[in-house]
Image (cartoon, rainbow, N blue to C red; front, side, top):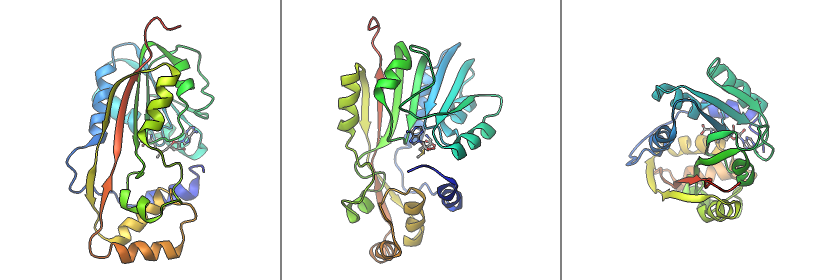
Amino acid sequence: MQYDDNVLAIRAAVARFEVEQGVDVNVLFTQLLLQHITDGCSLVDIGTGNGFVLSQVLQQSDKQFQLFGVDNSQSMASIARKNLVGNATIVEADASELPFDNCSFDIVSARNVTQIDVVEIYRILKEGGVFVFREYGCGKGMLEIADLFRGRIIRQRDPDYYVERLLDAGFHIVKFDQYEIKRKYRSAQELVSIVKSYPFVVGFSSQDEKLILEKFAQNATITSDPFILVTTKPKGCA
Ligand SMILES: C[S@@+](CC[C@H](N)C(=O)[O-])C[C@H]1O[C@@H](n2cnc3c(N)ncnc32)[C@H](O)[C@@H]1O
């Protein structure tokens, strides 16, 4: 499934609410990237979407660096280009075939992208380079919804899935933290909009919509299950 104009239109229409959230994993993710950024370094963000991660880094760092973003959706790549004009190079390409030389980046980031290719990431990282990854666990960021539509969730992956592949590719795991965060949405209707804007339920129908409206009519509290992995490509590995 690609992020086409249809999905973009739904996402643009959805309001975001940060409610009853103990830990801000987005802030943590950016902080982890900032810790590794030094003058002259290069960073590429895989599945960059609208370029959010790159924008955060730009806003919060006073270092001089080279920023790149990759996305396989033409629509998203063009939004990222507009958002980051003059500050980053945005390339339309698939994560499984990155148009970069071996050992060319100090840092690779990926946030909320299930289709990473760890072998490709390893290939483009310099020795000693860092890969910072944030994704959701089996709950896809909405545990109760994933439970409700069990068997119909797209690319439902346990964090171990990634850990195993990263280790097999040769990475060292530096940090792995998983979180459970309760979010109270304003209404069940809002929940429906969010589920539609992250189309992770196969064949989501008006019947499914009704089910969510009924089940969460009284309390639209949902558990998010993000995790962050920090890994390095060891030195002396080439
Ligand atoms: C949920 S969005 C996350 C966007 C951004 N990383 C963020 O955190 O705001 C996932 C993005 O990954 C892109 N994507 C999905 N699969 C991809 C692939 N195989 N190669 C490159 N980009 C991909 C999508 O087009 C989309 O823009």
